[in-house]
Image (cartoon, rainbow, N blue to C red; front, side, top):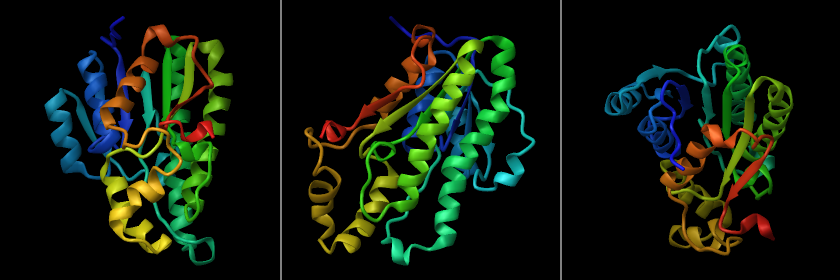
Length: 249
């Protein structure tokens, strides 16, 4: 069945590139009016223009600015994120704080801002782009793993509270996706593990996966699209792994 989102308004964070861009394009193609939110305003404007949406340049790490926000969206996709690879004993506390703010506190504030509109309309879809690291841990990623584990809990609480109001909340849990974020990790991982960059994908990123390839952003977007539609109305509080079998171990 084809997912139709005509008449729906969606907000996708981190939507100027990577997974977020693929999601924004998929939702727009299904008929949704998409708000392309990103720190990079020019890139967001380019994507928005191409899909007939609107751009929102926003620094989601500035959580104080989000405290009084209201959102009139039917679909919220919390995707924005960053990564930092470092052993705990040398992990910059400021970087830890930044990652938790951007990837856990900010989604909470956006959900908080969106729920009144969703409740009043009796329909809402919240999709949190988590990670296999929301379910499993890896060395040298303390902030990212902590944030994603927290996002999993936030998503489940939202599912319980939103259920009586027609609002679902789910996590999508990719493994390594072919995005700029993953490309930037290769050099960091090589240093952290003491191996050449050419060996990082196979020996670090895909070592636990049964399927030895990177996930494509469009594949993630396909699942998000289905979760956004009417036929996923009984799917809530769930975490959908797209990790090539990593979490099966």
